[in-house]
Image 1: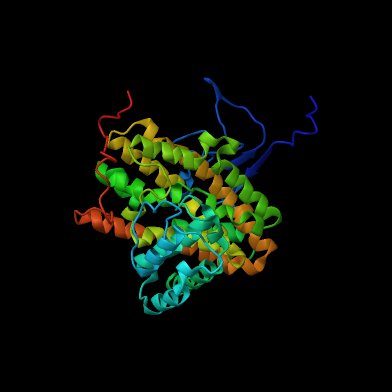
Image 2: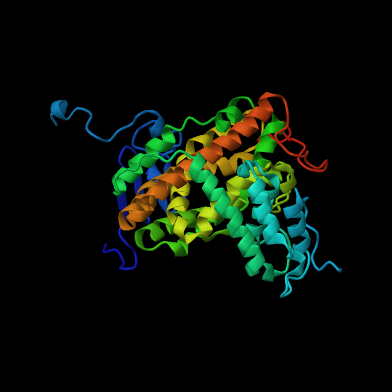
Length: 77
Length: 361
């Protein structure tokens, strides 16, 4: 299962305070089966409030979603 | 004199656009005699102009001059594109427009020239924007007639969607160029003509009974709507303003995903079908991707690699928000006082609002 040299590896970029940006040839599946997508780069929701999950719809910006530790002193984990 | 090309499908708005429209219907011979005195007349019009973004004659003239580079605005002798008179006049008007924008649009504080700082600054600038909300009005209150008017205004840019920013591709290098191409590839449907965003928008217009030819509604839109498109062309066609076109695209993408949902909601509330809302539905997902690429990989990388562009990246973003705010204010003012936002009514044949007759089954 060595990827062909012509296929660059899939990359996932964790956008600060935002979605996961997935670039590359991926299949996205859900319990109902594959979720069709046509664009080569997709943004996956990680704030939980998108109305088009699993894709991002930008709503994280309205709910103050942050990926920074909110309380570094007390996070403990 | 014999006309060589068809008369434009819209009217002049003053002496400059009148002379230019007439000249464009004639051959661009070496002497350019049909544009005799045009440069002086342009300088005089600029000297007298009080409010360039709302000046009908100057904005239509600039729109026509940029249109020579895009094509499809008026049919004319292709040699007009690089005729010295059209270039000199264009530069004079665009310098005045840029000067007004620089003195009117508040320049945001400059972040550090790093990818992360620039992306954060752009996101906070766009989320804090307190401009009037056209999208909320469309979602909740607009009538079907007003929704159609909104599409007519949008058609000036959107039938050319992505083109003004594509001028920047050869003007950028390295990471920023690659990021712009990643965004534009998606704008252009990933190589599928029918999925190009301008084609999706034309489908929406067709579904509303509107004319999908570019420039078909120039007569209907106010100077400000032409100015909004002209500003993008100004930023895109001048290499020295590459920071501004990048900042503009970032702000444009960052203020698109959430409003697109509201626009779709508005058309659904009015009973329009999925064929009409597809353009907006597509932009919710697309622009949530594009805004991340535009903020970090395009604007952020450009600021790191070419730090002299940073002030213009922030200026371009602020200018996008300001211009969109002025357009929204003008449209909402018309509608809230019970008037049409169009300069002249739509032709009788076009756009009988189809709400209720186009409901998805």
